[in-house]
Amino acid sequence: MKKKTIFKTIAVAAVLVLSSNITFAQAGSWPVPKAAADLKNPEPNNSSTIKNGKVLYQSYCTPCHGKNGKGDGPAAASLHPKPADHTSAAVQAESDGTLFYKISEGHTGTAMPPFKAVLHPDQRWAVIDYIRTLARK
Ligand code: HEC
Image: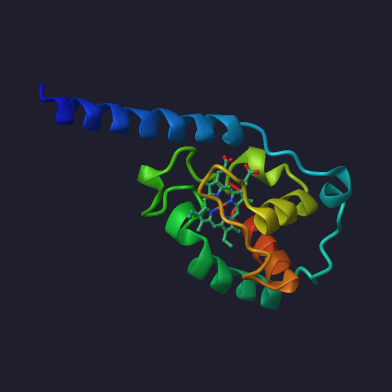
């Protein structure tokens, strides 16, 4: 191997090691403050809220979480950790406040972006009402 090639290989390896460490360091736990988890959803849970939530979900969430919320959107294949499966019992068992916090803040070190500057609180709550309709029957 030429010296230049060796340096290139080391540089690439270093980037891989560093980026995987960042992913491992942050991806595991996703703590939600108790006060945030206890927040109640102020949106009326009716068909018009769910319809609004669905439109927002389809624009902002399906690229990663998939058309049916299973975590299998077009971008999912290249992501580690994978986007959450919103139909799963684990996600459905979380409080509305917990989902609201996670959607608002995102998860550093993963692909999950923060939506607090993108979606109005009413819109985030509406998306949660829509996510509730995705529960595996
Ligand atoms: C660019 C990809 C991407 C987009 C866009 C995205 N997510 Fe995520 N989402 C992720 C990933 C990756 C995770 C898993 C993070 C982890 O495991 O730490 C995640 C996790 C979540 C979780 C946590 C579920 C749990 O396990 O508690 C919720 C809730 C969520 N996303 C909601 C949304 C909503 C709602 C939208 C749209 C408004 C959205 N996401 C858009 C990638 C994305």
